[in-house]
Image 1 (cartoon, rainbow, N blue to C red):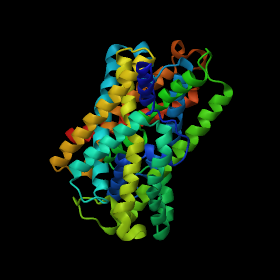
Image 2 (image 1 turned 180 degrees about the horizontal axis):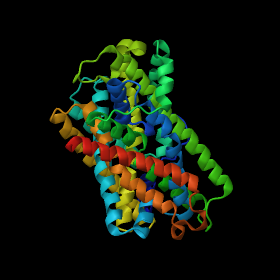
Image 3 (image 1 turned 90 degrees about the horizontal axis):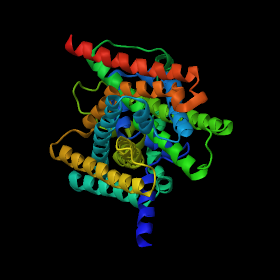
Length: 424
């Protein structure tokens, strides 16, 4: 009996990463982790309003990608990595697995690094010790508390992100310029700009959220609709569309607001070239001396919300690579993987702190890594959505695939341009 209870507990822990979160603060935090906040801030500080168009024009593509990911998972009853294993050559599948293990582990590490640095605003302790504590807290929450339960409490820490909105209302902004830059791409064909563009793509089009969304659909099907062999109903598809539209709007709006506030407070105040960026300076016009604490709480909250999907999507990729069958044994193994991946990320965060790596720079380069490895994954996802042998007659509509291809081509062009400019 005790062994059975332990397995059930492990299974619950393994599922706790699945983002069973509706639109709201939890979605805002998990979609905009510390890496995203830092990247949007640096984009505004370096290029003003020139990159606002990414968050606005990527909105239809992000909605389409989420719908495709959820639809494939709901119809097949399997996550994206399991579908890729079944329908692609091993080299492509294992590339996707390696990409998640490397990129997500690094992302976890820099998010924990940001948590430790943010916690330093509340406790005057060594940052390395604070990072160990933050990593241990994240592991404990993932193991013992279902994600949806602790997200209801942690999400309130992300209220500090609304300080960026307050800053916008306090400052006199060039509204016509902002409106124009939101819808008209302004591209500077330089290596630095392309690197920043790749970073913004990497944090706006977050691959781990697509895979986490797919696994959530599989879990919901197993729990509520295990006897049904057909695909999702029309009502369920409408709910998927509604959630994707609202969740993506919240996430992209956050990126727009952070970039505008950062441009107004950093770039437009003639920040010195090469100067380290203090993220809290953006909200100082509103929070004043409490800016480090307000931003620190938001960074800690967003990291706690993002770490489970990051670790979970990597763990699911590994589970699919070994073709583990769903059940209690698989859940137990995934629970162990979650702990291992988060622990490795914590150790790497401590190492970065000991080496004196700038946390903001580390967060930025994590987004660059995401952006540089996203294009092949998007190609596999879009091709999968059109395979009738994978999802039958409910292959994704051509309009969805068109928007998905648009995002794929845009990220690919940015990557190619970056390498040409770097080696030219």
